[in-house]
Length: 403
Image 1 (spheres, one colour):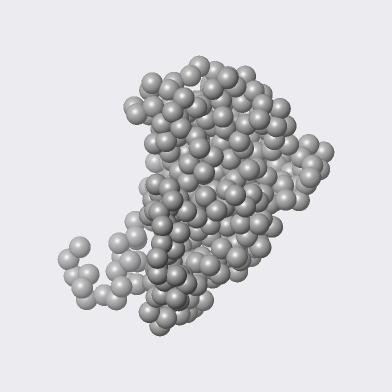
Image 2: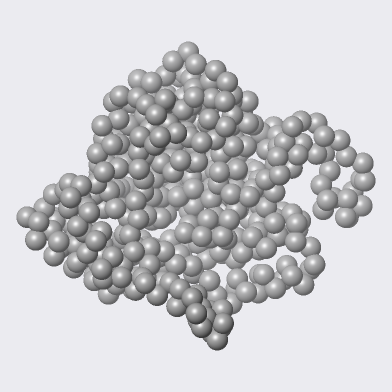
């Protein structure tokens, strides 16, 4: 863009992003994050060290789990989780057909087979426990659940299924940092947080997440042997790290298994610590905005608001809305874009991607219908009530025009 060199970095960013009057997401960053970055720069230690260790402790305490292992991103968290349980060729991993592709990609990466299960329905687009049970075979070794949009799956039913069939239960909690399980009738013990409901859980701190550090992720578990294995796998299988050697904790190291470089750096850990301190407040603001959306869109003919009757304490990561049909979805997205309002698509149906055609399964009609009709609306902590009402007004107008 010509002439950008005459503007400050912040002004350049505003100009580049000016297409969207209301973006899909925005960072809740301020002086705290600036101070966190400066703290690391002044320490002159950028690789995994004291900030990462502190972030792991604080994150584990927040969730009420014994171990948290920081990694480069949510995809690395999923990969290491599969490896920690020894999942590989010949194994089947049941997982939702509606999800970001990372969980399925990592299944293929370890040589296992993804088995795609349907969602409960358009009103509740999380994995259906009954469909999980229908897809279990002698090759099934694990189940991955994904707390879509920050809303926790039917974990009580799913946990019982996994216990009966001796299956590993992995939480893809990348949308659900700070969500809490409150359904007392269906889900005892109620009150535990996402990440503390299975054998192991994965989080992402990508830029659009409730807790955002640009990249970064976390694997959490209550099993000490798993945590030890995760830490080895995270850093080439080495028994000593650069941070240990820097502090004189042994110069010699061994490599005891084949691992990866999935370490988190100090800058992102410092940003994560700052964001973690704000998280409860951020999620509360997001909840208030979702309530405004629901008040303005409830009762719109043919439209569905997923999780409108949800009884868990969500992280309110996504504001998803299901249109009456594909054509109405398309018209609504176009109308919003014309007004400078960004939308997104969470998600296409994974088995319908070219790379996953060989894994296609029947019986995922709800997932396919959802993928064709869903749109994701803007939702971020600094968003205003008037912005939400403007978006809803445009959606109502499209609905009237197409009725």
